Image 1 (cartoon, rainbow, N blue to C red):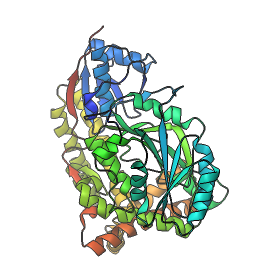
Image 2: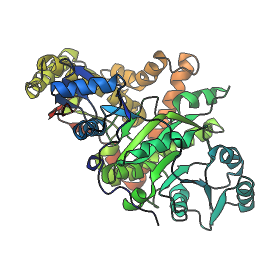
Image 3: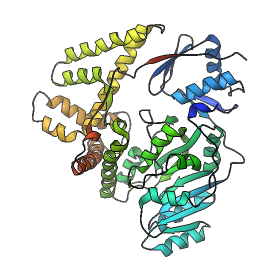
Image 4: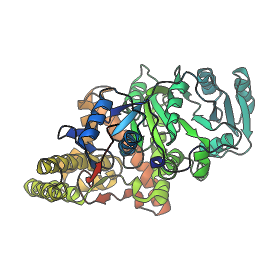
Length: 484
């Protein structure tokens, strides 16, 4: 049994006094700090003078005070993804159990278990050589529970969850190694009663080969160096369960891992936790490492499997799994540009800025902000559409290459995302190899999507999510905070 310590959504509880707050990378402050623009989905929050002063103090390093109105404002900004907590590792962290699903992973376990330093339960998911798993677990002081029928990582984690009695549980994959001090740092996030799950950054272990360098830069488990409030359609939309600390009661409350999912089960659980249980945080100040794939074929098979999960996820989560999300204005502008009418496309994009200005009339310099938001929204939409073409829609793109008028735009979309990554410094080799490998990676993912689409005759994972306004709906909110 797991005692339940949270009973509602993230907004039901105030963040703890004493934490620090740092601005999200995308936050903008205008009008002497009285207007905050950012978050996911995009919103605009208008503050009083006192509120602006309090936020300024937070972002300059003043800890959150034990003032209810200030903590309420902090909760709004945390939930919006405009700010993120800065926590201090705990000197006396709460008890935890680490659950490790494993199937014939004795060598990986031998590297992982010494790095954990906490009570550990290994779930042997019907290994062919169970004695090896049992032996490694015994040597490193871990308890081993065996499943007689292989159920996949999600089912193995649920077996482990049912066999432990701590409220805090950390799922760790067998091919991961944890850093020193990982648990005191992650545990500190649970001081906020709204937080139900925390994930560290997971990077691929460095190595000298081209494949290892590629994984180090382009691992799908590595979600970057910026902290985030995790939920669909946010900057960090999900976190993997390669390492995931959770409140066991929250996992129980949302029904746990879906046993029908062999791949994508982590995305599914994280999205249900964020929607039904509370806040899921990405905490990149803790960095774990996973082993890269052993071969290029293994890497491409992994990406292919990840793509295949999109169809199952779309059946459960609908448009949240869309390969691209943009406004109808942006889709129209880019489509017109692609067929050879860039001036018309620019005019449509400008029209979106004019229309958006009316929604921002209450904001100082609303017209300028509308132009900026619309322009940035169109740019982001173009990048998203290009990524979708190179990653998921590439079978359509290959057919479109036969149309002379479309050829330049299609080639730019298929090569552009990988070339841009190389240009900004994500380089594993010369540009030809770097771009070629990235395109192969994307096409492997897309082939997995298409394989399942054709097998299930379900094309929802191919459909873009079209919204009203570029850059989000830009809802304007007001917030106040007492000066004492």
